[in-house]
Length: 359
Ligand SMILES: NC(=O)c1ccc[n+]([C@@H]2O[C@H](COP(=O)([O-])OP(=O)(O)OC[C@H]3O[C@@H](n4cnc5c(N)ncnc54)[C@H](O)[C@@H]3O)[C@@H](O)[C@H]2O)c1
Image (tube, rainbow, N blue to C red):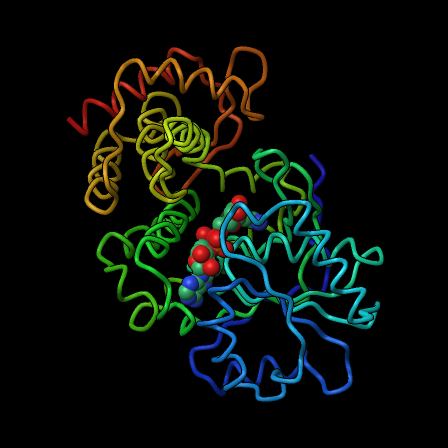
């Protein structure tokens, strides 16, 4: 298969201290350009003041404000941001600075990559999910009728600047959600990173263990460079997500929303079981992964009747072809294979396994 290259120019930058962040930012933010910032209500309150403290010039830059949350990631909000860009006379020389979690970088990237056929944008992720995953790799999208990421672009940001100090104000549940994606990336690509995560306290990530955020972000970036258009190896980043999305939808239908990370953690337990059955993961590693996930994430209560509902949801998920599912599964901790065929019966068994080990 022909490998498609990541478009040139995209950078991933890390800053541990304010002066490093200032240094990186000043290369992108000049005095004369018509830049704009995109924030949500939380990042306006918690992150914009820190950004201005580090780079006082930013206080002159107008910002566009959205409400917080996934419900904002839609085409009406995108149109609002396009209209604001027009109001501020943004043009091809302008840069949109996305300051926020995955919702802001997904939506901001989509808006910037389509406004006047594409203007520059930079991502400054402020959630753990954003730093470890969402802000990196140039996939931008909005949801349509509650279906996630239905309309979007592959367009890379000029740079992604990771400054873990933003995490000090991130709620605990959001830290946990981002941690699940770190575990996923480690399990799919880096056994030594997974080993380090096994003994890491989530509350240590913003300061003492920010190296682990940088390692995860670098891995994501490397994978996106190799397979920008998500045709092969990048699909391994879906590990835990096929079942994870089914858990998420099941609980949404029951009117009990659960966080993406908690759903993905449950999905990773099921998909590790499938990996042991279908792609060579050892029983010992399955037990290690399962108990680590159970120790860090709350259990999801499902009963045998829910299994039918989840299979129904999965049949309508975009990742199925015919009556079989194609999943990214582990061959061992730190190694993943994409497009492994899996029957409905096996999926059912993996959910029964999940119920049995959370009993
Ligand atoms: N493009 C990709 O490759 C990719 C990958 C993974 C996830 N995603 C997308 O990312 C989104 C989820 O990202 P998320 O979890 O960051 O969601 P989010 O952007 O909604 O952020 C979560 C919450 O934390 C708040 N917040 C963010 N930073 C904060 C801070 N520093 N202090 C206080 N509050 C803060 C936000 O306002 C929000 O309420 C989903 O839409 C998902 O589809 C995209």
